[in-house]
Every structure is written in C-alpha cells, then in structure tokens.
Amino acid sequence: MLVLSRKVGEEILIGDNIRLTILSTKGERVRIGIAAPPEVRVDRYELHLRRTEGQAEDRHAGTASQG
Image 1 (tube, rainbow, N blue to C red):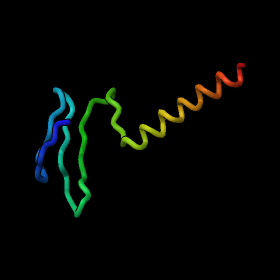
Image 2: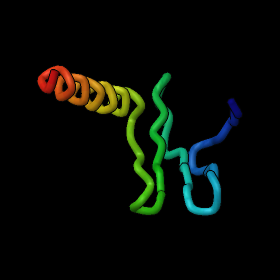
Image 3: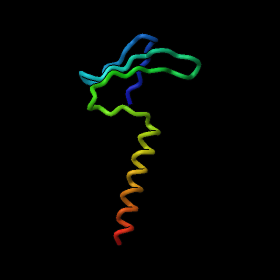
Image 4: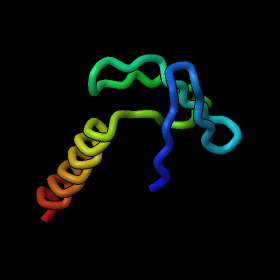
C-alpha cells in the first residue's frame, strides 16, 4: 500500500485518467473529490462488499433452486 500525505486542494493521480482531490478535512474526516471516466466504477468499499455479497447470494440461491 502506498501512503501519501496531501493538503487540502492537492491532488493524487492514478494512471492517466483518475484524479483524487483533497477537498476538506474536519477532525478525522476527509472529503475527497474523484474525477474518473464514466466506464470506471467508483464506489465506497462497504457498498462494494454489500453488492458483491448480494450477487454471490443471488447466484447461490439460483443454483439451490435448480437442484
């Protein structure tokens, strides 16, 4: 894992087409702006986990009802 320190207004580039901008900090919270092409899915990690777990459950339910 790469760990970087940034100040408000500073940016981080990922590849050639994804830009993260530090918008603000307040206590332990950091607001980040993300600019990415439409084909790149950007999501909070906990939502990603919930979605992928739900998809796995749907696949499991589909195979269980077929058996």
